[in-house]
Amino acid sequence: MAVADQAREYARQHAAEFQEQLYTLLRIPSVSTDPQHKQDMLRAAEWLAAEMRRVGLDKAEVLPTGGHPVVYGEWLGAGENATTVLIYGHYDVQPAEMADGWSSDPFEPEERDGFIYARGSSDDKGQAFIHIKALESYLQTTGKAPVNVKLLIEGEEEIGSENLTNFIQANTERLKADVCVISDSGMPAIDQPSIVYALRGLSYMEIHVRGSKQDLHSGGYGGIVHNPALALAQIISKFHNPDNSIAVPGFYDDVLPLSDEERAELLKNDIRETTLREITGVTQSWGEEGYTLRERQSARPTLEVNGLYSGFTGEGAKTVLPAKAMAKISCRLVANQKPERIYELVRDYVAQITPPTVTSEVRLLNQGDPAIVDIHAPEMQAAVAAYERGWGIKPIFMREGGSIPVVADFRRELGVPVLLMGFGLSADGAHGPDEHFSVEMFRRGIQTAICFLEEAGR
Ligand code: BES
Ligand code: MN
Ligand code: MN
Image 1 (cartoon, rainbow, N blue to C red):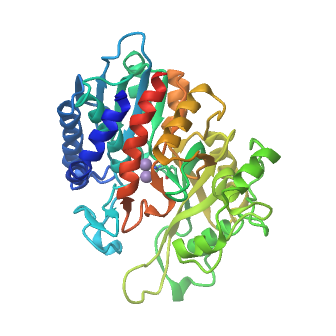
Image 2 (cartoon, rainbow, N blue to C red):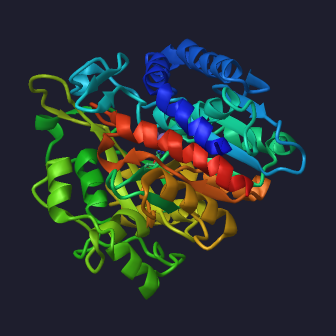
Image 3 (spheres, rainbow, N blue to C red):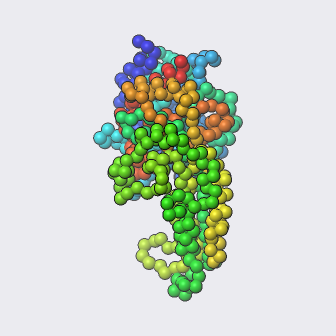
């Protein structure tokens, strides 16, 4: 039997066990943004390191950073001349509470209709765990993997990976690899395997608008003092043109135009209006004229309002004229836009359109570079072959709208090419209530990851 066949058989035999083990990880509420979960973050990291050691990695440790720790494990038994694969994932998850609309406890995984329901099941514990199980399948059968493997699982992806860049810079030798694999994205449908070749970047900002020095009686001052909530709404209303493109001057200057060839490719995998309505529950789609839904969702930049805050939002009525208003906004960016530059453009535009009756300030919270991968690069062939073996059909190439800022860091700091081998589904409900992960996808993902290690060794 070929080496991968033995590993693949092991994974099939142990499928139920693997799922139970994933449940143990999913039960730990490792919410990185909430200081109350600091201990849970550590617990999740320790659990992962112990699991890596248990399945046979040479070493696995929890390493401190300026924030939540990273888990680093390696198996270097293939020898100095063999290929080294660096696998990245994240063990932190978005917040989740029953009150957000969950049908079952977000931290008590439950299988329903072939899906595992739990926060982090798809993003990204389930996907990251796939690689640990692929490695286990080799190490527990033949005792060796076809390539050297380094695993880096971080705890701050959902809050912008602020400390990871430093960690990478301080550990370039340790993290040295020939190729980096990230399973933290999705495909449109389980019967349509796909490889992501571009992710969007991000510029996340806050707009603060101030009027009076403190909240006022809206009877006494309404009509003679400009309400900051209204002023903020007026500012926000100037962010888009009638065709829904972005009105910030210079915003599109650095956008790499789509070639006809790429547009044709993206069209093969367009988002259908009916599917969008079904998944999201909206009455109809929205977006920039002149572009397909897939292009708008992944190949075009956006400016979104993520949150609004002003005045009285409690129960009942309070006749108040608020002193201030705040909006959280973010721009998703595409190659070759620069997050810092976009922040400056938005800041200057807001300053220009702020009425003289209020003051405003735009602050940059976090940022990430867009990423685009050469689909013709040699290492891409290993990913294509792996999906083909895992699915029985060739994968398509697609762009994704989300961001993984560290992708650009890997290339810049380590000079390593990145492969985005995601195993999520667009309908998994990542970041929302009832996030789920397909059991079938979990299994195929492990099979594909096993094949990938073999292909990468060729
Ligand atoms: N896994 C996602 C990124 C993603 C989403 C990739 C959809 C492909 C498709 C990741 O965990 C995420 O949520 N990233 C954040 C980054 C931000 C916090 C800097 C995002 O995209 O909002
Ligand atoms: Mn993720
Ligand atoms: Mn996420």
